[in-house]
Image (cartoon, rainbow, N blue to C red; front, side):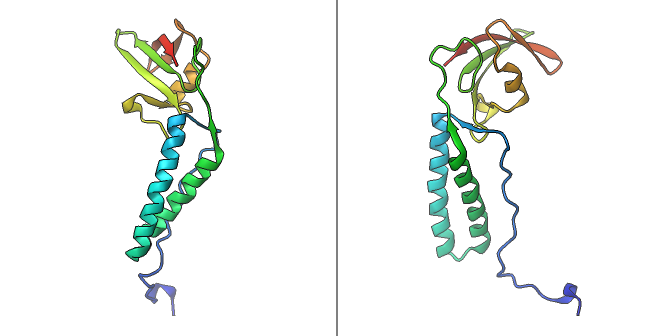
Length: 154
């Protein structure tokens, strides 16, 4: 009989893909490391709740996320920002001025910590890569125009 006609058990755990892990170094700020540790604690609690509720699909998702965050913790490289930065580096806050005068400020952080809407830019993003090593007054291309580095702070 063809496998197409065999009823598979609904009790089988759902096969979900692993979360992709970046091949870049896992640079983290102190806050980023704290967030990884906090997420692992949350997931441990969720795992216990899923086991108690006999929630196989939920448990599969949680186990996948635990593998991801345990890998991220194991490979994390804590980087403290320089106390008096003269150029854009990981962990610093950089204020950028657009050609129309509007300003935006970003802190360069680890990939898992990034939230551009909150001003947290992944150091691996194209914009951050163009900023690294630059100093106040330098410009970088951005969306068909230029951004000027107006200030850099720890």
